[in-house]
Length: 478
Image (cartoon, rainbow, N blue to C red; front, side):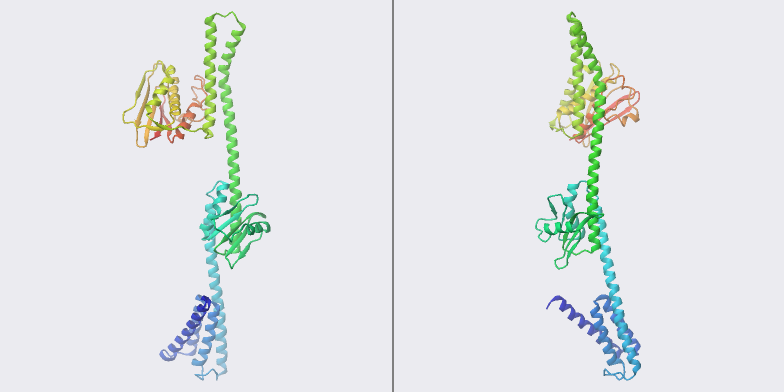
């Protein structure tokens, strides 16, 4: 016996039992008038139509009509009616019972449909929220089928975008959601629903334009929900593509601005060494009888200014590489004293005349760093301390262990930096307002230092008071 036949038999038996119970109650236990009996039967019909199907309520209405006639209308015990008025009452009862059961069934269906639509709307809202979390088209296309399955409790999902070779599935073994059906729905622009196999296919629409198709299995959604899903997915793909294009455009714009700024800054800084080199070469060419002393002076100028040019070009190139994440760090465990000693060796000419104090406690642990780049950061900080401090003023380098790693600081007794400039000091090409014309430079050194420290997973900063010097520090994780 099938499940539907079994349910029908059970419900018919239940209806018969309800009628029998009412008859026994009012015939043998609680004597009442026929009106009360009719109303009780009517209430029973309404309850059955509210919880079961319409056919069960109609069966109960007919059965109640027969029982009402047989047991409660004279002559009792027969299906004949002596008083013609009782015919009117009996027919009115039957008609009222059937109409009431139809209305109750309709209200029940509408309530079920409303609840189903409410659940679908809630799922659509959750699905739309998940679509907003992805900012990359390729990632969105790969995750869409999984989003559908998780949001709507499906067995499987797939979607197809014309112009892309792949069809995106939520799993591997999906036989019903074949590519042929998806491409046909995308070409036709109309949904296809297979109730028997619980399959739904619908187009992805962006306004009047069809941009693809999707399919689901495991449940049948309403036409309205399928249309809404198609619109949401199409808008999400379009939105993500627009965001990605905008990001690329912004990146290109920023790259162009950076290129222009580098060119302007480097061009400005190139003029001084090039002028010196040109003047020295011109003098040597126009005066072939120069003595050895003067010739040596001009060659020294050319050599120093050439080194300066090389340094400027190196800074600009390194900043561009760090901005584009094109630099690999060669990290190995090192004692931080190695970086400090290397920096002091490279900056010893600049540090001449400045008393130097270095404090590195024994408990400072080894750190995994790119030794050359951390050394270059320290050279930049020490060089700045020497450039912006008065002659003979002391410079202090200190390393200490803290909770998350180690911290290095370089202290000077220079003019200090005001609060406004402290927020800008690590930006590319920014130089102090009061020092930019007195001290040469491109304003890239501290920006490069910040990029290197952040690439190591650390942080860099400055504390300063006007007239009392500055402390540049950076933290490195152990």
